[in-house]
Length: 252
Image (tube, rainbow, N blue to C red):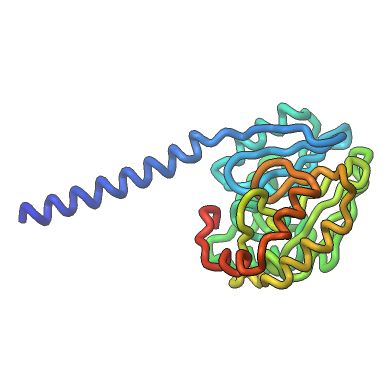
């Protein structure tokens, strides 16, 4: 009997510690802001990097990390500009890029844009809520004329997932390629989400060919980068990309 009590106590302690760590993880996460170019800013926290267009016409954000960070993200955005939240663009369906969708829809009144497959994959989650779903979806892409810039959102064929979009700010000369760029680390290919190694490499090659030498890149994960940084990632040997299929990424 004593051994059973000790075992039960140990299990309870383990779950309690795990729950406390989970809460502390969100409480300890800081959202940091970095100006990029023109009206474009970048937020880092936990999960995918957030791109922001902030100006007199309002706020457009690219991705929104995890749900428990939504209010912190909103505060960080408010420190950049006090204009209304207008739009959210999801680069793909993963939870570290779409987790705060519901908050920005319900609380901030934003409209969510994403590729058709983002909505399809979020709908298929058992625990999804209606308010987290993209309201406007597209097959090939969409263009925003916003805050004095032309913002091109372009769908890319199956690479990281089958729902990938990249965002190109023409005037600011900034690219946000979502998780088609993991700066300073191995890429992650989500096979269950329709991603392919060949498609990933093809897409990255195409994107690099579009960039100017002074283009700034907000990667899906990692630090603000340049064209040469992106080229270094592409130059990794193909077996590294294949090896990355077996890595467990902490964000998913």
